[in-house]
Length: 132
Image 1 (tube, rainbow, N blue to C red):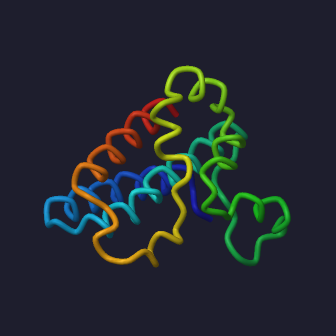
Image 2: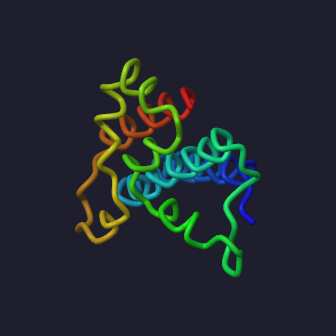
C-alpha cells in the first residue's frame, strides 16, 4: 500500500529534486519532475479526504476503486481531492499555470523550459500544495 504519508514524502522529495535540477540548469528535467510534486500531494489529499490509509497496490481486492486515481491528470486528481472549490477560488491563477502539466513533456526537445518558467512553476505548485 502507498500511504498518504508516503505520498507526502514523495512530494517533498520530488520538490527537493526539482530544486537541485533547477540549480544545475536542468530546466527541462525540473519542469518534467515538477508535476509529480503536485500529483503526489493531490493523492495524499485524496486519501485524507476519503479517510483512506492509502492506495492499494497490485493484488488488492478493490482494483476498480483505485484505477481511476492511478493517473497523472492533475485536474481529475484535484476534483477527487475535495479541495477543488477552494483551490479554484483562492489560487485560480496558480492552478491555471500548473493544471495542464503532463508527463508527456518528457518528449519535448531540450531547451523547451527556461529557468524563469521552472521557477514560476515551482512557486505555483508550492502555493497549491500548501492549500491542500
